[in-house]
Figure 1 (cartoon, rainbow, N blue to C red):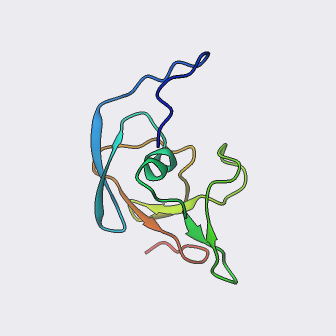
Figure 2: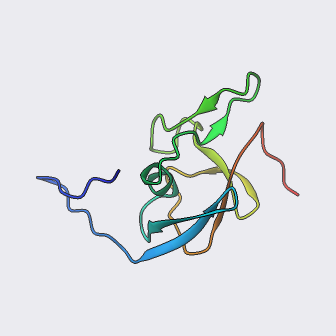
Length: 101
């Protein structure tokens, strides 16, 4: 689901791009956040909590709360609510604290 019209805000859509989420190919638009593209594709859980492994989704959507930490192109702890979508990126669900390989 995407907001396509708004009485005050102007949503300019970039080019349609393909990206990967847990090895599944999805589509989004350049310029939108990774979280927005995932949400539009029906993905609501961004990561799991560290101790109880409960699903965590978007909360603040401004990069402060860390509920949206994911692994992007092999880099852990990326706040996908503020990270812009790019063609071909690989996004993975982060489990635990995230470790560099």
